[in-house]
Image (cartoon, rainbow, N blue to C red; front, side, top):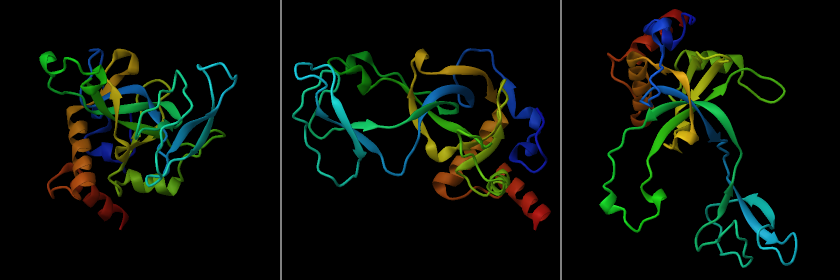
Length: 236
C-alpha cells in the first residue's frame, strides 16, 4: 500500500504499517470485523407497554424513548418472556453496524474455574477491547467527514481520531475512533478476522496516541511528537 507523505503512516514507511496475518490468532493490532453500536449522545431504552395479543407472553408492543441518567427506573408490570425485568435495569436500544475494528487489548489472565462456580458465565467471560473504523467518504447512506477535517486528522491534531487506509479488499480511507473503545466477546462467532494486522511499530504509534488521549500528551522523543513537528514545519 502507498500512503501520502503528510500522514502518520509515513514516519514508519507506508508499506510497514499494515502486514499480512494468516495466523488465525488475535493479538494487539489485529484487524477484524465486528458489530459496533452507534454511540449517540443520549441512549434509548425499550419499554414494554402493551401486548400484541392479550394471552401472548412471548411478544409485546414496546416504546422507544430517550434514557436519561437521572430518571427513576421502575420494574415493568408487564411480563414478557423474552424481556425479563429486574430492579434497577432497563433494556437499552441502539443501532449497530458491522465495522472494521482494531484490537487494542485481548490478553487477560484466565480466571480459575474454582473461583467461578455458581456464577453466570458472563460474570468472567473473556472480552477484547476494540476501536471501530468509520468510512470517510460521503454517500446516500453515510454522512462521512468534511475534507478539511480529514486533513487535520491526517496531520494528527486530535488523539481520538486516527486517519488510515484499510488494506483488505474493499478497504477505504477511514478514521479510527480511539474514544470509541468498546468490549466485544472473545467468542469466535463474535468477530471475523480480516487477514491483516498492524506492524509492531504501528502498534507502538497507536499506543502513543492512546497515551496522548488518556494522559494528555506524548514524550518529546516519541514518533507522534516527531511527526507533529515535521507537519508544523511543513504547513506553518
